[in-house]
Image (cartoon, rainbow, N blue to C red; front, side, top):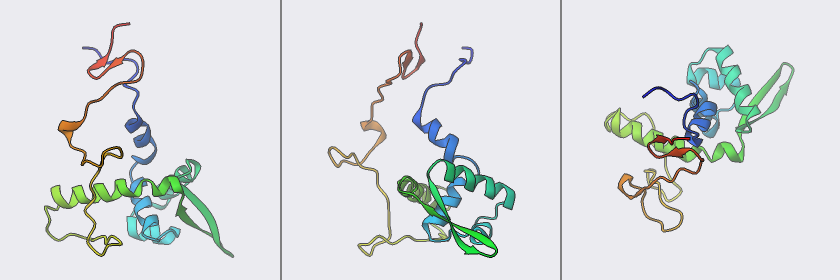
Amino acid sequence: MAATKDPRPCSIADALALVGEKYSLLVLREVCLGNGRFDQLVRNIGAPRDILAARLRRLVDAGILTKRVYSERPQRFEYRATPAGLELEPVLMTLKEWGDRHIRKGADLPMAVEHSCGSDLVPVVTCQACGGEVRHEDLKAHPQVPGWAVTGPTAA
């Protein structure tokens, strides 16, 4: 089958277009850890300064981060997560857990995150309506865009 002119409309693709660029989620990780100054971000992420500056601009423009002056001379900025940015923190924690389990395989974990209950966080995605854990076998997709089915584009 030939590739379609337009790919499937998808909120995952839309989100990845914004936060899926290299270093973007690492910027958010650092900001959520309280490391929002440019020099901290450069040191902790290891990104080239020009690329990091571009990612920061994009995240600020998208409303994921805010930028505030913390020094006038020389002028320096600190970045903080907006409410929209903080909504991505559970995504980061879920990615961290996946990496701990499937890449590091539980050995030499670089960081533990403690929940307010005092235990190490192990994130679980649950259904808001019933509280049940989200599992693949319990999900059924219902495309909402005309001309699309789960299997792909439908005949016009």
